[in-house]
Length: 335
Image (cartoon, rainbow, N blue to C red; front, top):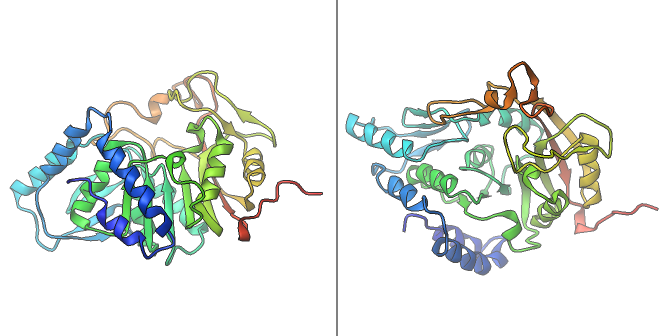
């Protein structure tokens, strides 16, 4: 089977996630058997047509996640590789380098990682959950920074198959992307040292529920890395777009940074602080040969790029760090 998680499940038995092994096995089996995505057979066909190559070293400490092969690909296999990877377009997260073939993704995720990474608790030896991980680009960077294991979750089958395309050659048993959502995970796992949620919160109708689910996934003392769209304003302010935001129809809440900090504290996190706030630029999100159509430049007012086409403030993203208290004790009320 092309989408196989046996090595992940086997590895859970001797880990802090051992109690997750059985329910996760059942959940993955059901998800793989009962999917209703009509494109998945096409994605799997593209995956199966990628050339067979020896296991390759993967470099996760460079801007482009890079697959290295000491033996250069001949022209036929290079063409076969590019044809297969292009059948898995659009590539939204990256960049990647497959043996010299560069996938210039829509998002320059290396730029976000460069902003976030210096502020993180040391990832060496950590077990990490990456929520809304896309194709797993950031997970490879986390491994490159020393993480012991990274489990990413994303409901997009295309993203999952893109990850399997990378791991077809890396054959890495410590990084997995699961076709799941955070709300579908076993509650109160309380096992991850670090949990990332980047670019997810504004897609959730109930942001406080999302924060609660993130807290439950963390071990006591674990670190939350939360990145989301924000607006300028004082505590208590949040933008609720009446329609679309930057042409997206699934954006619900854009809080101010003080409001976001208040939400995190309300849901039981401590030591909450904003470590970065950056406007999204057309250099970071753009149309490429691997993601055609429209991108950020098309979502902004051409006469005033400080506003979206709907008239809202243009995208600004804030990154917050927070910690689940030792003992998991909530301190919501202070007398």
